[in-house]
Length: 148
Image (cartoon, rainbow, N blue to C red; front, side, top):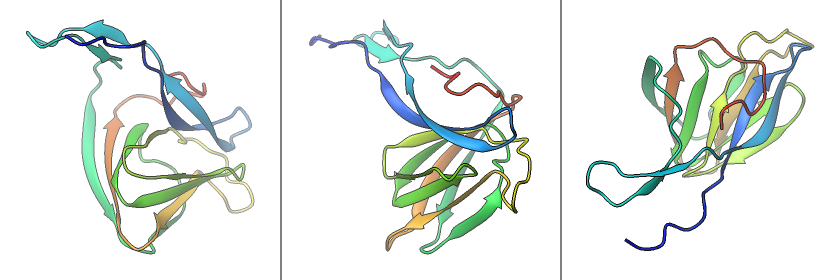
């Protein structure tokens, strides 16, 4: 086996709701990696997030698609497979993501303010955004970066 290198820390964006009911985004890091074997394969770095009932949904957002203000249907991991998209939270933070980048959408239970509730999102560029979501059947947390 080659040198596994240092323990990884992988960034993701967390869309969450503050105590005031306003959605916000913060860059967080998955950092609870352990060097483990899977079967007889050489050890690899794994950050086990636990087992939860979930639903996997593949989404294709057309060119020019905009999802006006809405909340995520459930706490969910969102992984960009191809194309680009943006997410804007109620506090005005806007992020953009492309292939291989991912976020955790947990903006359930926002307070509507000035016609905004949850987040807006949309595609960027001249190709559809292809996303994979893993919707967790769990209650949302109000703690930013609670997934490590």
